[in-house]
Image (cartoon, rainbow, N blue to C red; front, side, top):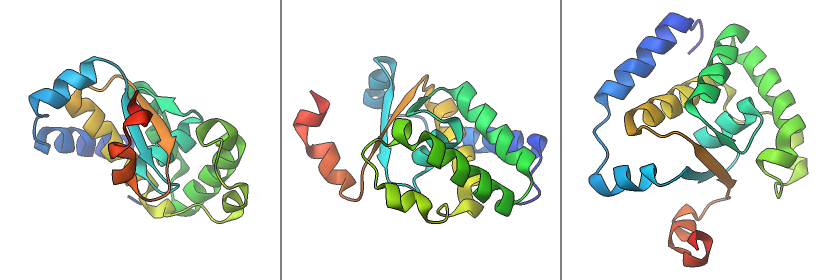
Length: 152
């Protein structure tokens, strides 16, 4: 999303929100009961949102501010540098069990960071998600879903 402007980012979020199918009834009901739980590793869209926001949870307004920040940086190189900097500063909050050595590696997929935030914003809008709580995982996401003690 090089050369992105606030206006075209808002238009893309609106278009994606319109195009996404409605949530099944069971999911819509579950989302009304509390925060959505998101998980993934360092390059997941949820982790990118948390890195840009500086917290392990976020609301739609937080994603909007982070998206505006990435747009203001103008290019993927500046976005990569800024994300690397904030990710290192907030790692103890966003992913406290993360491998610290990995934080010295270049930020993963910086050219996709803005697109990932746009996707998160659209999904949150479509599903009326008020809050997302992120938990870091490394592979085996299906195992996390099926591990009942995690959900107790």
